[in-house]
Length: 268
Image (cartoon, rainbow, N blue to C red; front, side, top):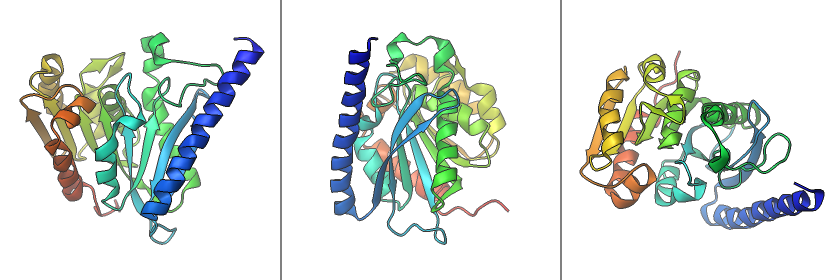
């Protein structure tokens, strides 16, 4: 990429962030919550962007729990819509990520444009590291968030990445909501990771008409060691489409989080 094109895309990305900031300012004024667009780097230097919303009540002395969203392949953080708002209604902080190569997270360590369509499995397997880097960033810079009380909500490849990230972040991640995960996707293998995650609560959702994923989920749930629920829908599609075409699934997730994650006692 020549210098002029690089400047153009850098400016374009900056304008997108500014536009998002304007929208987020409007949201913050309306909700009284704190809204920030955060930019941080993964372990290999890739630049990642996410929307962070923190309840107004949060402070160092009154820490809040955190829910991190990881979207499906080919989608973006903008696709969570109603579910994101409902989770925010639980008075937890939310971090809505654009996974690398998606949405606003498209600049690699060399500030060059990088899109998921050009990735091989060698790059996709870095997605769990991106989630772990997000957890570290929150821990380092947001003391009003309890980084030992995190739930991950992932769809499709975001679900697979969440499982692997949770396995090596058990001291941080205390619950998983998995929409249409598989045994392996783009090199991200989940069974042993889910087994090693231990006795933490897990909600797994799938549609019977999404046959490949449904069959994988029936096998995958057997590896879960903690309190586990496998919610099956007769139709609805994969990942984010499932919560779109089965809107009651969103309330199911909220109710599950309310009993399995919200205000759980910290580990001693």
